[in-house]
Image (cartoon, helix red, strand yellow):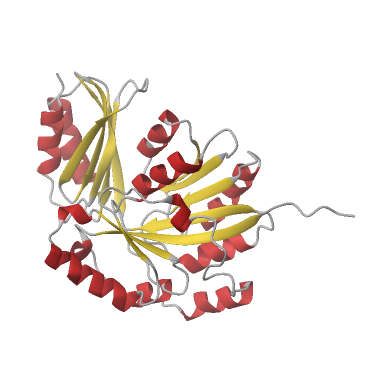
Length: 312
């Protein structure tokens, strides 16, 4: 008699740049990972600076990165290879983080081809603070409604009640039957969104997903990225001043590890709002990633020159 192997659950976390996907994932992993549960995080990242991988490593979390691509389109072949490598690690659960708000259908189609996997849930993280700053792309978001099992509305502590009510009304219009979870800092109960008995993909087979892909308008927001990497030490104040001088219309997201006169620090910037935290790693140089429509060579040269001049 053959023994049926238990399928490995995989959760897909989506959301706009800087919405807080990484924070949500780290919150979930802290709750479920341990000696009896190996969680592997598959990251799809712009550029070549893997700051989130460094944060994961500090917490003992295994990561598999798909760099320089968007998992909704050009990197889909790389997703297949990344999943194969992850399966060799014999994980108990996989969490896939997409770069930006990718279309769920191609991801679902790719993952459905792995007999070892069970898609547990699609989760979309929405940035309450910057909700109005990004284009709506309502036709794409309406197609998301067929796949998204949970909405996590993050950073609600940074807006007032009137703004929150307005955003909730818009989310309700796009996702009328999708459960919504509100959080100030990405903290979410794993019991609420993991190990679902049923999700929106339960009734979809491969032919149904392929039909969704064909009937969804092709749309992809082109986002550029560049990095600045250099030796030397900096002050937090000098680096933040340089970053604050960049138009948020050109650069949506800035993140990386800065070697400061007070140890290594992780910088996270979204729409000109910046946070810093310490990290215990042995990185010997500063690496910063800049993401946005205006991330061109001219701006890269300008920012790298300013950083060079700011060295201690």
